[in-house]
Amino acid sequence: MNNALLSLQIIPKTPNGEDVIPYVDRAIEVIQASGVKHQVNALDTTMEGDLQELLDIVQQVNDAVIAYGSPSIISQIKILYAPKGASMDALTEKYRP
Image (cartoon, rainbow, N blue to C red; front, top):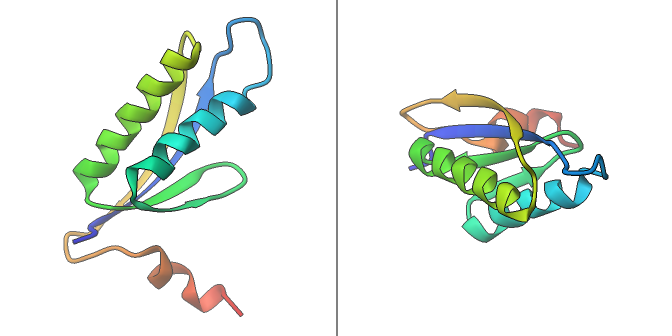
């Protein structure tokens, strides 16, 4: 059961001050490969699933971005935890045309 929504924004340090977008793209690739329902937004990516699984994905994202060449990363996380169930659609459907 999906019991959590987790929004993740990463702020990677780049080795030579270059653009962070390739590092963010790498992070999104990890999320996409995980198979969890997700939505890429302009400033973060929201995932839906089991809380522990989502936290594990955050760890995988950080590991992948470090492996890509970032010496350090700030990860900003927002979590909605609802043991009876959490859904992006349920929270946003009233705002869709």
